[in-house]
Length: 172
Image 1 (cartoon, rainbow, N blue to C red):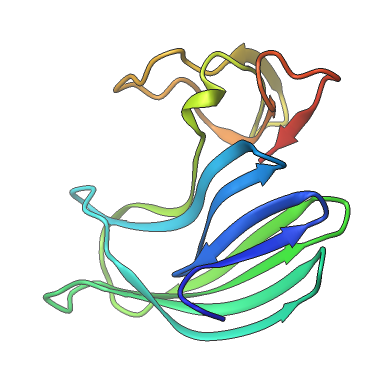
Image 2 (cartoon, helix red, strand yellow):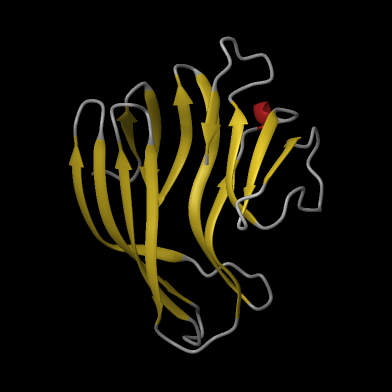
């Protein structure tokens, strides 16, 4: 694979590179901007990662990727390594999982997935599944704001666009 590759899961296309997914599209419609794993220190600084191994099986409308990422701070005080698995199926579903291990003792404010929505998702209806399995209905903010609109999230299902017909939802 090259530095950034276009791969397919059914009708959905997505770019893979540097251990992250970008620009999820159904046709010309962008439905997600970016999905990646962030390693943040106790002051919210992002510790950059690098791919240390990659196995890929790419088909016309599906893919399977397994890779390793290593995050190390410049001073060597923070070390974290994880294995990622990406499966794109012909039905358009994409599954991203990770399993990691701290290589050093360090304080962290976040280690986990970050999902970025495109500007076109502003105002779309969402269903938030919380960690206690309760469901909250709402909408994504119309404008970027410094506060987090939803908390304690297990999953998000949202309309692909405010005017999508027939009604189409995306689960993240």
